Length: 331
Image 1 (spheres, rainbow, N blue to C red):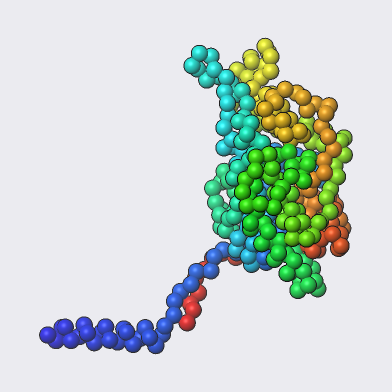
Image 2 (image 1 turned 60 degrees about the horizontal axis):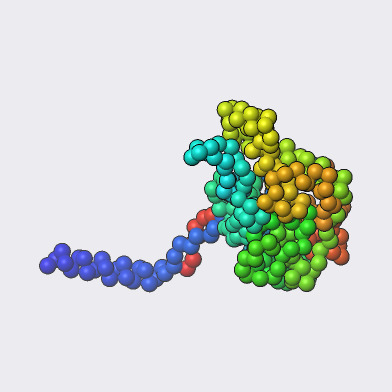
């Protein structure tokens, strides 16, 4: 009986204690130093970076914050998940025939939302953002209050947008609709999606023009990068088979490289011929660096930005700062 009374007393004390000290621990997620509507830019590696660096670019990817530093929405393609179609001898799979044309032209996942931890520390095959060398583009301090409402509107737009990733958008950026569903043959790349979010919210930012002599060199670089990637993936014996195949015609590495260049220049995703050679057009499209002011010198030492005070709300470049998540007590 005494033991029972003691238990009841302890319960009563705990009840009063919880009432007197009511509160809870709350988790504050990982965040970065930006607000809703700011553009997040990052440098990186891979054939896209190889392509952009020929223009003098330092940044390879970008997205937009859709809240105050916790969540990024961006347009991307998981290139290593595009199905490869192979040649066969009887029932034996031999060399690559081509990439799946639809998946190459209409890249997935397209526009996605990621929290900061996933964007920077998620699946290594899918992570597009790097902390080192990253930055946030935002209004200058004097215009923060005047411009923030416009940037909130752009963030609301990109939150609603649903679209594929389009390799061809590097040549023709004007192919994104203000809709919340996928449309085959329509979409954009990362910086084109950010541009359209501002455009649909009422702010048409400046767009870069890249002449033919530069886009043709970029296409050649893209071709070489893809050849090397296919050969690295094939290994030593696989490269021998590709060489042997190339001796009698066009090797699988050349077919895939041609296919990607044809998609880049003309959205001819079924074409594995060298159609693109000598035909690559000029480009009207923005790379991530083109979101910068024309007066800004990027870390590679180039002034790639095409924006002015009248064309853009983003006048300030601030180095990326990541704050790890933590718990705090709320009464």
